Amino acid sequence: MRAAILVLNAGSSSVKFCLYDGAHDAIVLRGQVDAIGGAPRVIVRDGGGSSVADERADGATDHAAAVAHLLDVVVRHARGHALVAAGHRVVHGGSTYAAPVRLTRAVIDDLAALIPLAPLHQPHNVAAIEALARRLPDLPQVACFDTAFHRTQPEIAQVFALPAAVTARGIRRYGFHGLSYEYVAGALPAIDARAARGRTIVAHLGNGASMCALEAGRSIATTMGFTPLDGLVMGTRPGSLDPGVVLYLMSALGYDRAGVERLLYHESGLLGVSGIASDMRTLLASADPRAAAAIDLFCYRAARELGSLAAALRGLDALVFTGGIGEHAAAVRAGIVRGAEWLGAQLDEDANARHAPRISRADSQVTVHVVPTDEERMILRHTRALLAA
Image (cartoon, rainbow, N blue to C red):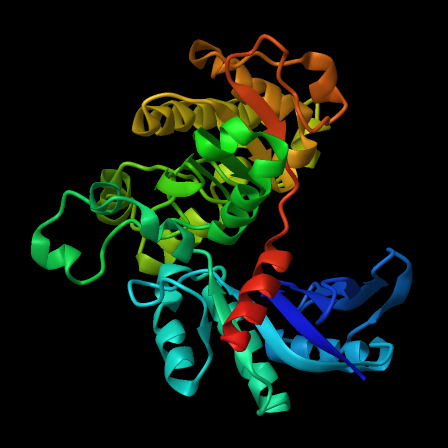
């Protein structure tokens, strides 16, 4: 039997996975369980993209059951591979975890305590870890944190203007999407040496969206803060919001804590502005002016935040788009690059329409790239390195 490492990425209603050959980094299987709690289905493909399984997963009523079902499918189709370890994407590591860590009961309890800081993701990350531990108690598991990459930021970029006693309780900017930014930073030397060693802003745009300022590949500032609510407009999250709005919602409009949480995590962003959908693909295909208004706001806020990050970098050498929207929505990229023309970014319209790897003109002072991210492969690397140490 060949050794294999399982990588799990548990979302709000799905569990995505990749099974890697432990020796060669090749993907053996990849797929997901979708619509957990509804009409769940497990979809699995092999490393070449051919379908291996596409079936109902009626027992997957929650994330724990989904992981159990997924394991059954993986074992059935693993083709001579045996699990030797598992790596997990965990959204929030708090102030304690600044690097990948081997999971123990104490670590799992720490991560569960952070659920209020990332309620869309953290409970499902923890549920997947717990489910795998129950099923395979002797299997080494590693947690890889979206917050860890941003711990290189200077202190001034991490603190809020709050009393020191509050800051000491862990109320600070953590940043997220770190595994994606770390992968892109590692890929840049082969793509654009100037971007790799210089001042680069990476835009991870998807249902969750953020930007990160990199200086020589290290995070120095990012748009998300204490929670994944801050910064850019997102699928169902508003991004930056005057805290006074929350106070007004509660004091004048009758919202309680649960109502505010529901509004900010599930009812705002692209969905709230458009009243149509949270999915950028749906909005781009719509002729409804409300869809256009939501897209315009998304691009406007991204261009505003890009300018802020350029200020933190004291200039800009390169802009990189990644994530589902960043990699596939040419109109959104164009809208954001137009907002960065004052920085020297000039879009090549034809290259952008073709989703080319480089979408800036030859005479652009700022190079603009599209780089597919691979968070799962980043987790694989961290898991292997930690277990080999």
